[in-house]
Amino acid sequence: MDLTKLTIAELQEQLRKRAVTAREIAEAHLKRIDERDPQVKAFLRLSPERALEQAAAIDRMVEKKQPLPPLAGVPMAIKDVIATRDVPTTAGSRILEKYRPPYDATAVARLEQAGAVILGKTNCDEFAMGSSTENSSYFPTRNPHDLERVPGGSSGGSAAAVADALAVASLGSDTGGSIRQPASFCGVVGVMGTYGRVSRYGLIAFASSLDHVGPFARTVRDAAAVLQVVAGRDSNDSTSADVPVPDYAAELEKPVKGMKVGVPKEYFGAGLDAEVRAQVEKGIERLRELGCELREVSLPHTDYAIACYYIIATAEASSNLARYDGVRYAFRAPGADSLEAMYHTTRGAGFGAEVKRRIMLGTYVLSAGYYEAYYLKAQKVRTLLYQDFVRAFEQVDALVTPTAPTPAFKLGEKTNDPLQMYLADIYTVTGSLAGVPGISVPCGKSKAGLPIGLQLFAKHFDEARLLRLAHAFEQSGGFDL
Image 1 (cartoon, rainbow, N blue to C red):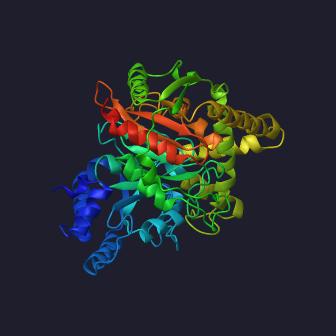
Image 2 (image 1 turned 90 degrees about the vertical axis):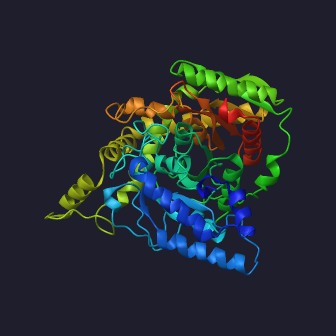
Image 3 (image 1 turned 180 degrees about the horizontal axis):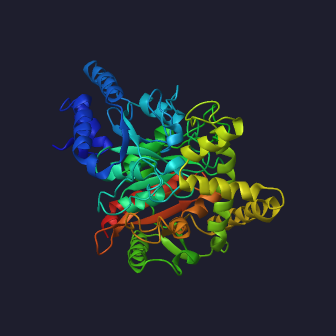
């Protein structure tokens, strides 16, 4: 029995039967990481002592015949922008190379309270700014389906770890598509909840009005199980919503027949790869076969989403990253003879090219004389995008779109063309700006064997319906169309 290929429910059944121990499960995954990760490079660092200590605690519970928590013994990986107590958390950046948080992010604390075994921290684009995980200051992660291609970004390490069975599930962050797009490229399930559904406490900030924490898994049921644990109000995060969290697992088996699903016409225009279009159209037809009522809808301001996103996100990044100045913590460049020189040399050496680009863009759009022309206008456009989704959900229960315009592209293919890289998020940034929940699920492969993702959106705080529809799609064979 290959312990690295089992689902959460299957692992827990083996634990309850005492057919295997939590330590054996953890060691099996650490062994696979040792064998596979030198090629994939999903992990920045491992935490085997912490993992085995948690596994031992689960094994003691089994011995005492105590009820097991919902994620007992489940090996998980954590994106390196999410704080882990005493384990380096660098956000993929040299400027935080030696930072060891004195606390756990709320999502991490909830995972361990639920029995999850934290294996280590996964690679990501620096400060979550990127769509390929090539912007990491350490090394690029590779796509397990083709090691010459990117895993997507910015949560590429978390997606690749799950895709290559290095972890059963993982946590990523999503600001403009950073969970859903790598889920599409790596052929796994990736969930972005409603803004405020999962606490951001302990998430290193990129763009605070857009940042989300969410899970990757190989099945919708496993993703729902992880979301169940991390979702809910947190007093440490004033933006987390005080909205009841339903029983996602119980919702999965409810029927989807009669559900109204909208197909936004703006998502099927120029720039969509022909193979992606064909597979997503097969996926839409599968939803029809499941009894869903399909309707064409319009999200008329979609064309403005990328420009709107890259104004708001960079403006917030400029503000959030101002704290990394060499004064209070983290990296400080040596040799400066004045405070101004220290700022300049520290930020110049500590930040990578993409982070610098976004800081400069954000500073520009916030500057005197340009604030109203760019930032204020982008906020007004964001409201129009939000209203597009609200109106659409007055007609339908969910929306179905491609996740990304292409399958995974080759390493280095877009690194010298930032605009083309930004367009990799063209179908995901809209949901981020509107704050609605989204999920990417596998929808077959290209002729070259590369995964293709299908994206679903639902109205605010309706993750249960989203997961139900995705689960029905999976059970119907939709992942392998």
